[in-house]
Length: 136
Image (cartoon, rainbow, N blue to C red; front, side, top):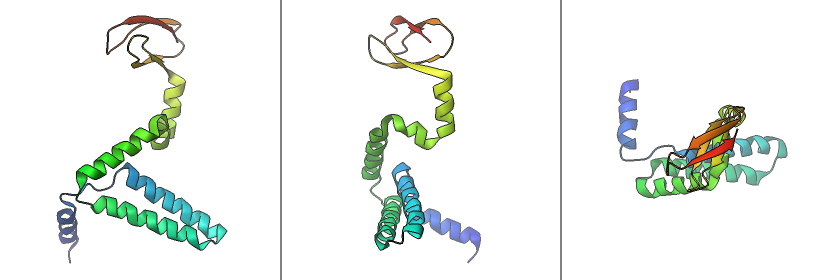
């Protein structure tokens, strides 16, 4: 079978399926870490847990119930909250923390990003257009 024919068959199989998402990726990474730990700890149950995580991740990728998998992934990302940028790109998150300060609008609670080290700034909220002062 030619390489192009195989790629076409895989594309046809994945048509109507979601493919890998953040939750499936996390399951695979946790499974890899558990396998590495099991290499040194020599416990049999860690291998089974890692295999179950890989099977769950593949099931998520191949599921045709796209709406349910999307809702599960959205709930997972919402549960991560402020940890999410640190997991996705730690270097970028550290740079963001050093460069900018995040403040909340006193009127509506919208988070606004302001540059650090600029002294006192007058900020306009992008959501409610309230003007307020903040020390950066």
